[in-house]
Image (tube, rainbow, N blue to C red; front, side):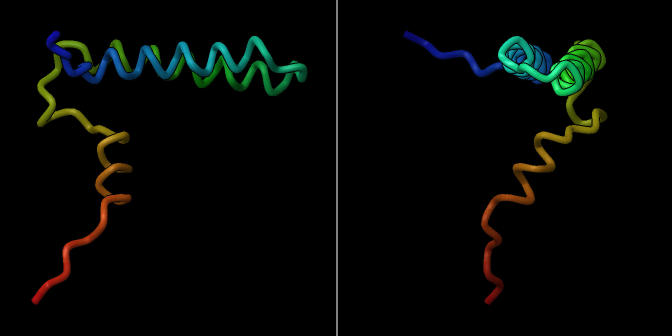
Length: 75
């Protein structure tokens, strides 16, 4: 079985689904609305990233991963 890596748009759509699920479980209408706003933002990011070459697209997720990665020590 071959596993295909998700493209950026698919990742954003998955994030949107995850935060929508959190919104459904939220009791507070204010926090629920914020989860929904975040989901819509992820959907817009997915739309923007579809068909765009990755080199010319700002990628906040990759930036966070790069910052979190351990730094190589200089010798």
